[in-house]
Length: 391
Image 1: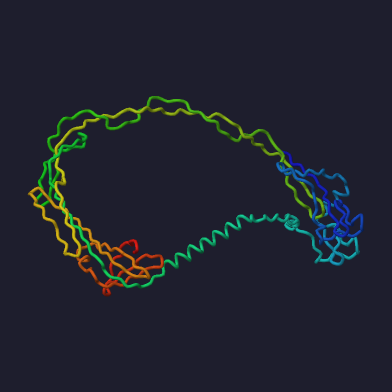
Image 2 (image 1 turned 120 degrees about the vertical axis):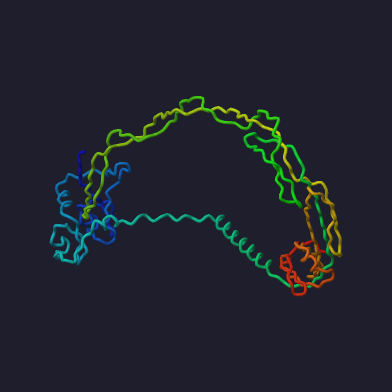
């Protein structure tokens, strides 16, 4: 892969008279005769457009002997006295004849790469509708937060217990023999054991019988293969292409180096493989009837009352029976916050329910949103119930 180099002559713009595209070989503006200086962006040379794919400069290379000599002279230096640019191999300023000193500077390679500032990014106008939307969201959010804070502020109001209600239910369950079905491989004969005082029972599995074949599920069975193909893309070598790099020499010239590299192209190909095919088959097993025991509800009694002591209904039980009890309690209170409102408490235990008596004075802590946070009878705390409609 042969390496190829060429010298490209740049152009500069005079900042004194605005003459443009002056060849680098001219150290003075041909229009106003002012020398090219480091300041005023006169040392920012234009080398023409660059091919995006190869990096090659589209401007023709120079073959002029004087231009090639100037390019080979090294980076230009700038006079400390008149700021004019001079050839790198010159010891005396061509403009004012001052000698080059140790403080006379030339552009470094890093400065050459960064000398030309990038074009200023165009400011995007902020969509006005988006600004209004953002302001609206902030206002709405602030309003919601403020409303939530206001709604959580509480105040104390007087109240009293106006009624108490209770409901007691008792259900009688009996341990009874039943017929069920199950898969034979999951059934194991176990003797039943009857409960004592409603506990300690074992349901058991007895008298397994009447087994028949039934579908229990399905399974996937391989029945062969079929070819499955899809189009894919891969990168393959498809010749060579030119790639170029450019080095600015700091004197209005640039050295371009090009060489050939392997070129890669996308190739579409057919990718095929065998894929196993399946069919769905039913799976059968033996399903059998068997005897066991279960708790079955056979009776229920309910008692309820208002302002009286709760009591449980009576149910007669046999040796294979057990009882389940359920209690519901309700305490209704009233309070005044300018209007009379009702609130309901639902105690969870009998002892808690009995602590509420009709006519007991209360203190209720209620938020601005109308939620009862705390009910205090005679200095004690109670669970919070639910709000009812005001009167």
